[in-house]
Every structure is written in C-alpha cells, then in structure tokens.
Length: 222
Image (cartoon, rainbow, N blue to C red; front, top):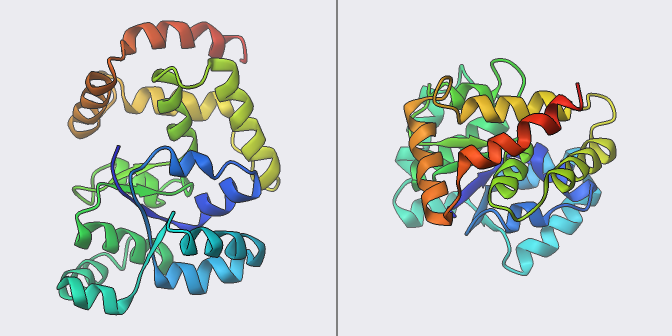
C-alpha cells in the first residue's frame, strides 16, 4: 500500500455510490489539497462535501493547507511543480499532482481518464514519480489480490457507474482491458511493470493465473 493524493471526481463517484471504502482500503494515507476540498468538491457536490468533511474530522483523510506546505518546507517545490505544468492540467488536477510531487506521494487518484487528461498524461510518464489510479484499476487490483471475485469486480464497477456516471458511463470490458494492457509486458511501461511486479510479489499473486481467469469472463461480455 502507499499514500495517495486525491482528485475530486473519484471522491464524488465513490461517495455517491456508497463505495468510499475502496479508497480507504487501497491506500495507507489519503490527502487532498485545500483548493480541491474547499473550492471544487464543495461546489460540485455539497452532499459529498459534507460526508467527506466528516471523514476528514475522523482522520480518514488529511487536508493539506498552504500553511502546511510552509511548515513542511515544501511550498517552493509545490509552486515550482504548479508553474511548470500549468499547460497540462486544469486547476484542480494541477494542485493535486503538484501536491503529490512536492510531498513525495506515489499515487494520484482520479477518474478523469479522457484522452490527454491527467490519468492518461501520468500513464504516459510525462510527469515522473507519480502513478495514476482510476477507480476501476483499484477494483482490478482487488481482483488480482483475490479480495473480490470477477463477478464482484463487475458488480462493483456497475454500481459506481450507474450511481454516479449517468451522463458519461464507463464500460466495464473496455476499462478493465485498458488496465490489463497497462500492466502487460507487451504494452506496459517499465515503471508500471516494475510496480505491478512488486505489488504481486508482496501479495504472493500469480498474475498469469488471474489473467487466464479474467480472459473468458471479459470475452463473455463482448
């Protein structure tokens, strides 16, 4: 497990669908920069903001403020990363990724997977040292860890998309295939291949076995 910097979209998707535990069970510590918390999340979904605020109060998520950056001695780094990547991201994503870079946080968690969006940009390693994860990739990792079954992975995916993505729903088969490709020897980057090898080694996972199990399940959905 590792720490993660949160984007607002995945928070909204998982809270609206009642699946916020997917975040808590996937990472050691979750942080969000104050701009995303007080501006983006509050404006986009007041109901999620209220529930999320309670989880902040209970210590499940840490809000990082401007004063915190100064106290940690990393405000200059944060501003440098923001300034150098303004052309790549919108304001929310820019703050979340700059926070991850400045704090040395390994993961950026976002469901913005559109072409040229933050997830795609980080998968392409345009920004080094920050690994992106969308909610379906977290489900994929739960599946290969045998925490959930194939059917449960499918049902959890559908629960999230039906509850929170009615205008632009994601397709299960397409997104899981993209996760498979990302972590495959043929298509994956050296960084992602090293990461998944370490993940599987730590959890004693036979990835080939899990992929053989997954293939006919996905084929049945085509």
